[in-house]
Amino acid sequence: MERLVRAALIQATLCADASAPVEDIKSAMIDKHVALLADAAGKGAEVVCFQELFYGPYFCAEQSLKWYGLTERIPDGPTTRLLQELAKKHQTVLVASMYEEDLTGVYYNTTAVIDADGTFLGKYRKSHIPHCLPGFWEKFYFKPGNLGYPVFPTRIGKVGVYICYDRHFPEGWRELGLNGAEIVFNPSATVAGLSEYLWKLEQPAAACANIYYVGAINRPGSEAPWNIGHFYGTSYFANPRGQIIAEAPRDGDAIVVADLDLGLIREVRNVWQFYRDRRPETYTATTRL
Image (cartoon, rainbow, N blue to C red; front, top):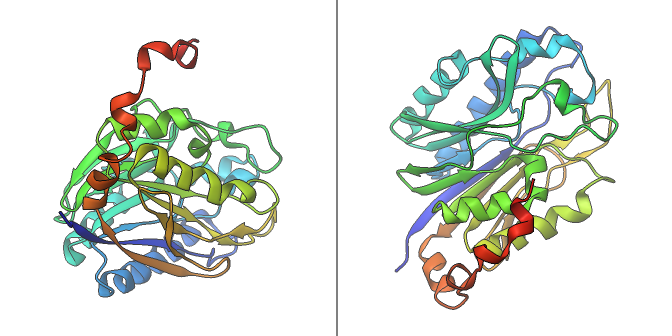
C-alpha cells in the first residue's frame, strides 16, 4: 500500500569567515538554515535533514579550543529550542546535526530528531570518530557515541540517523534496519579526492542491503582558511532498491526534495528476504572485541 512522504535534504555553503567570532558564524549559519527550511516547507517537505554540524564550518580541519564554543546542551540548548519552534511552525519533522555538550569537557557529534509538533524525540551520537587523515581531527572534539542506534517514531514514519564517517561501517546500518528504520539520514562533511568514489557506492548499497530509504547529505564548497578539499555536495535520496531518485548539484546551496513511498519497503522485502535469511549466530567475528 502506498505511503507517500515528501522529504528534503539541505546542503549549504559556509556563509561567514571561519576567522570570525564563533557566535557570529553560528548566528549567520542558523539564519541561513531558517530561510532554507522555510523554502523546503514551502515545497511541501514533511521531513527535513540538515548537513553535519550545520551551524558552523567543518572545524575539525584544525585542533583549536576555539571551536568548543560551538557546543550546547541537547535538548536544553537554544538551537534545539529554536528548531522545536520551527518544526511546529512548519509542521515538519526536523533532523539536525549539532555539537553537543553533555558534561563540561565531554562533547559529542550529535543529531537531534524533532517531531512535526515540536516534540524532541531524542538524539543519536556519532559512533565512529575518525582521526587518521590530515584535516579530519575529530577525536580532539568528539567522544564516541554511547546511545546505540535508536530509531525515532515520527509523524511521517520511523527515522534513523548515521553520521558521516559512520557510513563506512555496515554494522550500524543493519542495526538501524533491525530497529525498524524506514528512512535513515546521513548528514556528512566529506571532500573530493578522499571518499568521493565511495559516496554513491556505500549509501545506495546500504539502502539496498537493508531495504529502507537513505538520505545522504553533504556540505558544498571550500572552507578557508583550511581549504582541506572541496566539499562536493551531491546530496541525494536512495530508495530501498538502491536507486538514486533525487540529487543535488555538486556546488552551492540546494534543497533536494523527493516523494518517498514507504510502502515500497514492504514490497521489496517481500521479494528480497534478507531479514528472514540472515544468520546472526554465525557472524561471530563481527562482534569479537
